[in-house]
Length: 70
Image 1 (cartoon, rainbow, N blue to C red):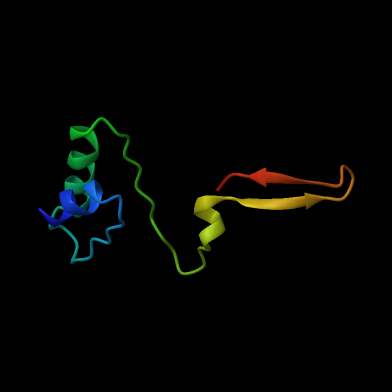
Image 2 (image 1 turned 30 degrees about the vertical axis):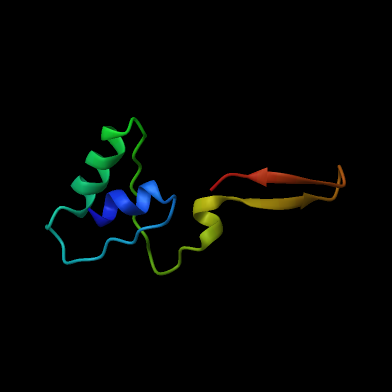
């Protein structure tokens, strides 16, 4: 219920637990039930937020920022 509530409130949800309890299955089922896509990200100790969201990098030749997707 809290998962659905977070989605309806346009909030964020962090699902934490031990391996094998169905966290990924819950997220996938919820996404598919409302017609959304599902993507899983495996985090590593050296991962940065820009690895996921992308980053704007300044191009000195064109004097413009270019977006590099994560």
